[in-house]
Structures are given as structure tokens and as C-alpha cells.
Length: 340
Ligand SMILES: Cc1ncc(COP(=O)(O)O)c(C=O)c1O
Image (cartoon, rainbow, N blue to C red; front, side, top):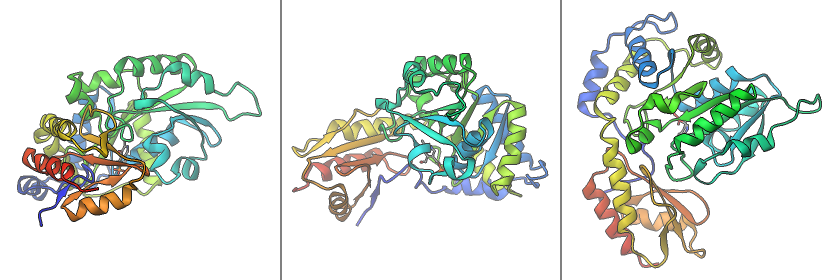
């Protein structure tokens, strides 16, 4: 049976052309700082994001965690959106690795306002963890790939800097926000201190992320990366795939967005509802209260469609370069035909 795999945009496999580029990559030892392909990637990413420098890291999680360590001291308060990846999906690393004290703020769609942040900042009081860092996420994964409006990012950035706080942007899918809105990448990053971006999601590279920020911060980030065991050697092999992904797979994210919308608009089942119309490539579907997500996914998998649970009665379908328009049409037929 054909398998339409919508579990994540991380499941894509490198095609022949990408594998060729990997095989041909010029490499050095990146811990010595002389892998030319990594240097090229870092320079290119910094140029795209409008930052002084960038650092290649193995994963988005490591990029985020280096940023947290970079901007804080153990015992500090960090402000996270309650549904953020940093809070939900990084195995408690903020506490385990950097000794941080997170305060959560709920913001539908990840659209955090400065007033909400200001309200929870601890006062300057020896009894309290010292506020140090705010993190935003764009696009926002658990909010269904929602694009966080630029005005809000600017508003939070302005507030942070006025209060002497740092701002980190988890931009694992910032590419999607830029493609969906036409607002250039560098504009999204203008007010932030650091931003992390991933090549292994919609861009289709097998591995790799970058953390970007000032030259000074990236120097310190290099030390923190080493501390975490993220110093890699002939890693130009992977950087080559990321460069290839930037050349070939960035603009095509628009197709993924159209495909997610196609499924959302085609869904027509009395017991299933689109939770939010997708801005980008992540579609959340709510099930009637008596349908458990796990059992539903099992049934869906038997019909050849794979997704993931995103709550007791919610599933996530993610579009990416390895599912075609036709695959999405087929998925709609299967969903609409389910006897549940
Ligand atoms: C918003 C967001 N941030 C960070 C990450 C972490 O990336 P990685 O899986 O490369 O650690 C993910 C992964 O899906 C993500 O969705």
C-alpha cells in the first residue's frame, strides 16, 4: 500500500542531486574552523538573516539551547510561550543544562504581546530569579505553523531591550514565515539578539541548523557548542546539503503551504474539523471529543495516511517536499471517506 507520510517535514530524504553535492563537498576540520563549506554556509546564512555571524550546529534543539546558555546565568528567569518547542520538546534542557527558571505565557498562535511579558517579569528583588531572556517561535509549530506577526516581534524586541533583556527567536521554520508573507528573512531578525534556523525541516537537508547573532556572541556560542559535544569535524558534508537546500528548496516551500491549505479546504467530514486555517505547512485537525487521537491515527495509517497526535483529540499533518499535490488530494479523499 502507498504510504502518504505527513508526520513531519523532517522525514524528507535527500534526493540524488543532494547526495551528489554531499559526495563532492570540500571539507576541513570545523573544530579548527577550517572547513570551507561550513564557513561558506555560515557566511551565507548570516547574510540572509542580516546578522554579523552564524554558527553551524547539529540540530535546532542545540541551537536553541546554546542561545539560552549564552544569554543567561543559572537561576535566571526566562519567558517562554506556553506552547513553545523550547518548553515542550527539548527534554527539559533549559533546566537541566542551564539551570533556568521558565515562566510560561499563553498566546494563541504564538502571538505574544509585550504587555503579557512585562506582566510576568520578576521585580528586581533578591528573592526572585533575575529576568534575562524572552524566546519567541516563528513559525509556531504547536499553533499549526502560524506566522507570528512582525509587529509583535518588533514590539517584544523593543520592550526587551528597554528592560535590558535578551530576545531569542526559534526560527526553525522562519523560512516558511518569509515565503508565506514575502517579508525578507533579515527583516524578521532585525530586533532579535539570536535566531536559530533549521535546514532539516521543510528545506529537506538530512541534518543541520544554524544559530545566528553578533560575532562576539557566536564566538562564545562556539565554546558552548563544544561543551555540548556539538563540535564536528569534516562536517562540510552536511553543510553542502544545507547549501543545496537553500539553493533548491527554499522557494518551493510555497507549494507545501498550498498543499496544506488544499487539505484544509477539502476536508469535509462531520466528525473532523480544521483547528486553524494553516498559514504555512502545518495543519491541525480536531476530532470529535469521543475520538482519541491515537486510535484515529491508527485507523488512518491502515488507510495509508500517517500523521502525529497533537493532543488527546487533535492530530497534525505536515506537508513537505516528499508529498505531492496529488498525494494531498488522495489524503483528502481518504480522510473524507473514513467511517468513524
Ligand atoms: C519550532 C521548532 N524548534 C526547534 C525544533 C528542534 O529541531 P531539531 O529537531 O533539529 O532539534 C523543532 C523541531 O521540530 C521545531 O519544530
